[in-house]
Length: 626
Image: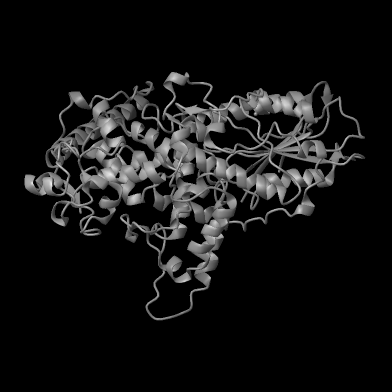
């Protein structure tokens, strides 16, 4: 714990540390919408030594009780019940709070499916707290308005929450303001970095001595860095009922701050006019939802047990690229990603569960043991790596992660903007059955296998439609149950060959890639019902079926199912030339910046000039991924 002394309200005493709505009650009837701790100790002149500690724990993304060090810090403060080293006479209190914030990453853009998952997470958290004699208080609105109102109402002395280290723009601005207000209210604030296996600051400190611009940008380099940082701490147990101070009867009966019961209880974004909120949905869209998994810590731990703890041999030999992206009965992977994204599972819990499961594998002939980056441990390492890249990008250029401009890790590419192409891709109407099946699964279940994500991302960007990866990231952000600020943007940069991966001549075929895995097209038949009766021979290329065959199966191409929006064989080659031009422009710009740096000139603007420069001849040939 880092201790910092500050002066507050004329009192220079104690220790201080670093680390949410006016009560807007209107519902959203239509959604046209190892741990690192920092402590600030502040003293309020209005408190007396007779008052007990009143601690607020602000749940944000860590919607769980297990391995939640900031929650445990809050409970420790209550159990110690001391202020400025003086034991208090009155009983301490704890107020677990989650603010329904329409401008948060979780709510700003979300489908009804994501909203339902969110509601389930909060309901489960409230239930788990109640089983321990506490509850979840859920105000709605702007955290910088609501939290101070609650501090005053409850006479709060301490505030804890999980630190957001990625630098996500809204969270960064919100947290800075909350910290400022807490200082003015004389509140002890303690934040804990526990969203990743190690705190991101520890990677930067131990890896590059605090110089983020020197940070490795490869998985191999990160693997080495992970070894330098040290062993991954064991997860902390969830607090027991005896850890919670008794709850006031009036607080227990407070009906104004109950968790939402349905998606339409969630608030609108404040920063966007209702006419511009997207995606659009209402109560009718919330019926008969079919998510790949349901939300909450309880189900998350069950999923971890069923997919990891109970399958030692499968876990030990797991290789992500070898899992099936066309499974129709049950996923071929763990499906833990939504729970990690919402914080229903801690990464350390998952890491050690994997390790414990592998230890159970009996020695036998033929047993294989996979290794990072394709193993399950490797998937957790990718997650930390992605978060670290977001942190480093935003540290160098605030708010740049998730954008092309000003992003130190993203190459400038002059993408096109075609609303027809974008709508067809998003709505599963491209005329390429496998691409459309993936996008339909996304809308129906809030999830796609990682190879399906690769294919649709390549198709939208450098492969076929030449649309910006920023648009694709926005669609995924609103639709995926596991949408994550750091991971989502990293993967879109990677798959569009805008950053981290540069083999743009390797292109996913929307036809050939999946034929070897699902020759009869069962995945397509499930998610593109119009093609359900199409003969196997034409299931991936229905436009090639004779007209009489199309009529016989009740699917006439151009009428019941769209024609291909582009000719993949043609546009993929054209786009490879475009990417070559963009890379040449990037190289020329980098060389100019280097030369200017030697002369003491400022860095160039980074504007794209690829359309004005012909691509240099390449010896590389396009590779179609089959």
